[in-house]
Amino acid sequence: MSEHEYHQRAAEIVQRLLNGEATIEIQTLAGREQLTVKWVKINAVAGIDNYFIAAADQRGHEVAEVDYKVDHNHRPPRATIENRSVERAYRRKGVSRQLFGLLAQHVRSLGVEQIGGWIRKTNQDALNSRQRMRDLLTGQRYRTTLQKTSSPQFWDVTTFLNQFADDEGESV
Image 1: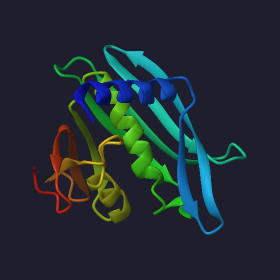
Image 2: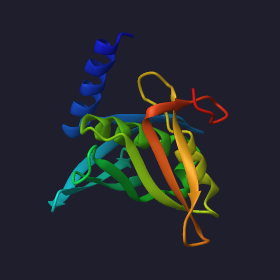
Image 3: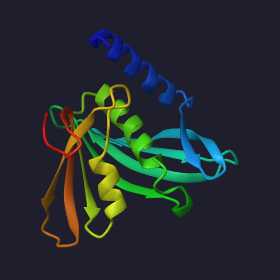
């Protein structure tokens, strides 16, 4: 895929997200299930935009959500994941991976190159899903780093949207 085609398709994905037309598909014991994606800009204060993205089942019940913010006071702007949750029955089915992929396409369209956040060291599922973030169009894995924080309970996690890694997490 050419760079022009990539940017065109990425813009289409973001537009579907912003228009409320995005969906994700998962595999369950009952078969394939399509989840509707809801995206909301909560507010904008002092150059910081707060967003909410969620996946809902066919009954409209939210089964996963991610709260994030984009700080436009930095050049380039910076994104931070504030909260992520997935209902137990929907874990390990790729819901987070697909929501993160949509989130990444959205923030990239705003010029963001890094997504920061903090993950509890005991939350291995969250850590795994973040370390396996991939570009929706190419399937390439984004490079993600972990650093210790001043709190012994959390990792400081940064995902680089302009750098990729191989399956072992090494830069390519």
